[in-house]
Length: 218
Image 1: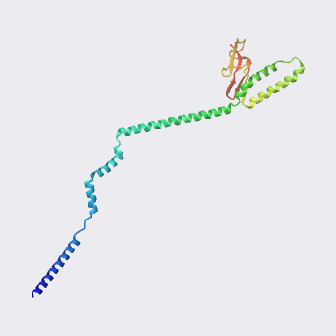
Image 2 (image 1 turned 90 degrees about the vertical axis):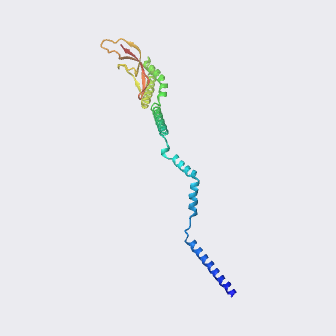
Image 3 (image 1 turned 90 degrees about the horizontal axis):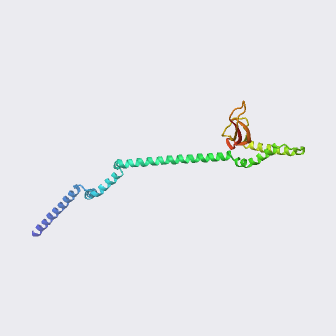
């Protein structure tokens, strides 16, 4: 009987243990799980407020509101100064280009001026020689040859745009004439008129190579 009593006690104990384990299992399953990750993040943000402050500071640093009015005015003034400088440089470059273009045009237009200037003394001497009438007939052919040379030079000058200034009887014009002497005007003659041409002048297109040397009435 004693053995049966012990056996009954063991069965009661085992039954109680199994029931306790079952209750614990049900309790664990019914208890809601906690997300430790979010808890750790919340804890980190609460325990490290400096990181959040740094982020806010960086945002404020690049915010347009963070630029004060003085700094903005300085930037505007600097921008205006640079724009004005760019305009000045652009205008100067445009002027340089215009000057270069004009120089090239003038060089092409007046390319014959140097050669013509060097030939003028020879032409003057040729004209003076032709003004002398030979006393003998056998020099007529020589004179005709000199006249042909003169005509060839005049034609070559015209082809290059060079014209003779021969202002006899014309009003005096200081742009084209150089008065070396004055002479009293005769009866019925106007004053400031070229009464004698001592040396012809020459003009290349619209540029005077040499003014005519003249005597003017007064």
